Every structure is written in structure tokens, then in C-alpha cells.
Image (cartoon, rainbow, N blue to C red):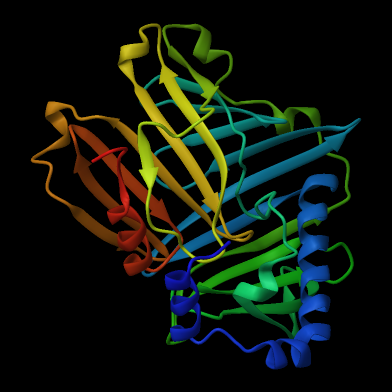
Amino acid sequence: MRSVVLTWFWLAAGFVSPLAWAQTAPLQSEGVQWLQRVAAAANKLNYSGTFVYRNGSRSETSRIAHLASNGNQMEKLEVLDGSPREFFRFNDEISCYLPESRLVIIEQRSVRRGFPALLPASLAGLGELYQISKGSTARIAGFDSQIIRLEPRDGWRHGHQLWVDIGSGLLLKAEIFNERGEALESMAFTDLRIGEPIRPEALKPSYAALAKDGWQVRQAKLRDLREDAPWVFRVDLPGFRKQTALRRSMGKDAADLNMLHWVFSDGLVALSVFISPLRPQDGSGEESFHSMGALGVVKRVVDGHQLVVMGDLPLPAIRRFAEGIGMRGK
């Protein structure tokens, strides 16, 4: 149940009345149906292509191949610009190859968010958080797409615009914009093939053979946190619910990295919290915050621990949430 204070924040931020919601419900429902198509298509379809990520003057091109077969998913993503990086996924296991560092990082991921997928959270409540509307059609990478726009109903989140392939439901382009309607970042396919056979070699890590010769392999170990003690989250952001709570350790010695990791989501956007013991290389411990496109990052030190909170949200929202994290009983 939301507190009186939280309800006040919803109203002060311009949350719509029940009457207004009733008037827009059919359009909201149709928009959610399109989002459900997107979520299903990214997991069930075979596709391969090239997409470009843009953030201000910075851009990065990646090549992706995705195969769904016999209930399993395999995916290879190769970053084509800058330092070589390659990601291979089999269901929820991710292998990251970093050839310049001669390093392979392997981990299980319980929450996946990566273009062209959506978060695997419930989409049903999005209409309470975003005004969802269907726009015009547009041509993206040779495919006819339907534009779906999600305008935030409050000041705690960014807006989103999605270009969805009319035939398959696959997401072709995604854009995040601020309260002034300015694009903060975007991802879009420039070349795409849907439903064609995926060659086996297209899904094999390019550096798998090299990784057997002198490369360092780090296997991340994850354990569920049954409770958040000794940490408490005193500030709620409307619509965000805890998805996972994990303890991460990496390397042969668990002391190499012992980090707690929480993921919160409103059904469209993920908010991640990382807490680890403060190390000398972590700096003075003063709060720092910055934005990179749509991504906001806040760092704080609380009781000898480094806190990092990050997500595709306005920086004031992330700072507000981060300031509410503390040790139980303090």
C-alpha cells in the first residue's frame, strides 16, 4: 500500500485522475498489447543484423545474431567500434570476451535488458506510469514499423518511443527522451534479417580458442539474498518494484569482489543498486553523480561501503532513491 506521502508525490507530479484514465484506457490497452508483442518477439524469433547506439555525439555499432530453438536461446553480440568486445549468451548464462585484457567473464543473469528485448517484468501496470499512445508508421531498416510512444505521467522517469515491426513485433528502434522531448539516446537497426536460418558459426565466440591459452577466466558466483538486511531502502520511486536481490563474488578468492546487487523495475526501466565494502581505490567517499545520455549514476559512501545506483532515469530520481539507502537501525 502506498503511503500518504507517496500518494502526494503522484498527485503533485501530475498523475491523472480516474476519469482521465477511463477515457484513455482503450488506447492504453492497445499500446500494452504492442509491448507484449515486442517482449515475445525478441525471445522467440531468429534474427540477425547490425544496430547503432547513439548518445549525443557518441555512437557505437554492434552486430547481433539470435537463435531460438527447442526452448533455448543463443545469442552473440559483437561490438564493432573501439576496443573489441564480444558477448555470447546461452539462455541466462553470459560470457563476455575482452581480448585486449585477455579476460573472459562468465555469469548468470537473472534480469536481462538489452536491445531489442524488453525487461521480463509485468507490462500490465505501465499505463498507470506512462501515457501510452500509438503514432504513425515509419520505415526502419527496410521494415514497416508502428511507432509506440510512452510519455511519463510524473517526473521520476524518462519518455520512450519505440518503432515496432508490424509483421513480426520485433523492436527495430528505441529512443529515450527527456521532459523537453529531446532525444537522450537511441538504438536502431540499420540492417536486419528476421526468420532466416542462423549459421552455427555466427553464434560461436570468435575468441573461444584463444581463451584457452593464457587468458584469465572469471566465473561470477551469484546467491540470492533472502532479505535485504542490514540494508534498508527508505525511499520509494512510484511504480518500481524489487525484481532481484543477489550477492556477487568473482574469482577464486571471494574477497576479490563481494558485492550486493538489487534490481528494481517499473516494467520498462531497470534501476540497479550495487553495494560493496569501500576500498582505498574508491576515492574520498564524497558523493558523486553524473549523467551519460539517459543513464544516471550516483555514488555514495555509507558506513564504510560504496553505493552505486544507476539506471535510465532522470538524475534527481536516482539521487532521491540513493539518499534513502542506509544501514538498518542507523
